[in-house]
Amino acid sequence: MKTIAIPYFHDHVELHVDEKNLKAVLLPRDWHEPEDKTERQLILDALRNPIGSPALSELSRGKRRVVIVTSDHTRAVPSRLTLPILLSEVRRGNPAAEITILIATGLHRATTEKEQRAMFGDDIVDHERIAVNDAFRPEEFVRVCELPSGASFCVNRLAAECDLLIAEGFIEPHFFAGFSGGRKSILPGVCSEETVNENHSFQAIAHANSRTGVLEQNPVHADMIYAARAVNLAFILNVAMNEQKCVIAAFAGDMEQAHETGTRFIHALSCIEPVTGDIVVTGNAGYPMDQNLYQASKSADTAESCAGEDGVIIVCASCCDGMGGEYFERLIHSGSPSEIEAALAQIPPKQTIPEQWVAQIYARIMKKHRLILVSGLDPETVRKAGMIPVNSPDEALALAYRIKGQDASVVVIPNGISVYGQR
Image (cartoon, rainbow, N blue to C red; front, side, top):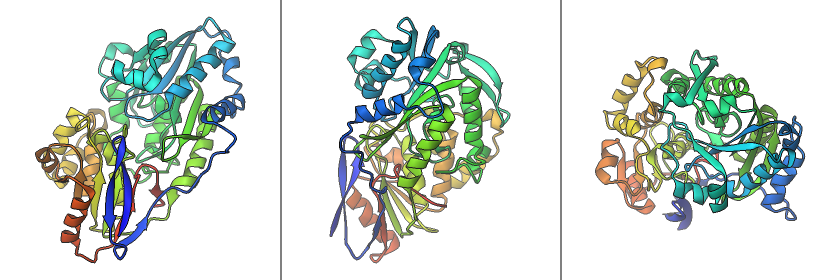
């Protein structure tokens, strides 16, 4: 019997699989950061050797209004470490700079003060100016241009009207934008509801190139990069992290060149040859990524690539913060997967409903696969979403064996966000 730990909330849950059933455990390739460099040193090295850009301290000279865009409570960006360094670099070049930290929420709920203190530390919350993007307040946005998709690009006026725009984040595979990080801090991060919705339309998400690891001819990415250029995102600091959420590499400098370097690094670690199993078990990287069902769609998407035509998918996600959005909850409860997909397909891009893209992805997956969910959600809520609620990975696996047979092959992807199959 093989015991496999799957990240879950702030710890993990254990799955026990008979070795005769276990076909593969899919993990990112090993990467060992230089033993003589701490996380801080890796970040400082990146900032001292920016890719395709002058140093941040040089860029900040003469810039009065500076905005640093950072991620919200749904991301594991190590801001306690990175933000003080970024603030110091800006002030090294311009001690008088008026700096605003703008939290990129996209369409997520506002990040609370308690979450900000956990993310940034008390010193930053108590002494820096922090603004939280609210996509649903039109007065906070300005229209900049039209995007390649035809979407209207409306961005938080703090980002549009500053003298120097900076973003921090981390790079990982992303299930329809190709990779996170870089330009994604702007769109969807600090855009209006209207802009995010249209960028995430049914047609855009259904496009053949809107897939994990794909940037070329990806319409979602094309809008994002255009938007970031339009507001002159001048400098980024993006990190790569291991399974323990420790920084293993950092990439700083030009928004496109530094991000591209980072995506090549992540691709080398994360892109794997898919292994097909009758049953695929995965997790959503633990907290904060597994805090709701909305976010858990990312690991379900990864599992889909290994589940064959009618394989059973088991997703382990704590969902400690519930479903993840009222629009998503309403849509995923609105009918069968086929009915949901058919209804969403009729919605024109400019009438896209907030959060419909996650219901669309779950519907696509559940049209072909039974989905068993290990979570803290109310079982009836899970059933209404077309999924099967269980209390543990072992209970889920026993149920999957009843569906697929006792000899069914099992593929385990402990962290379904950290890897992706070449499709």
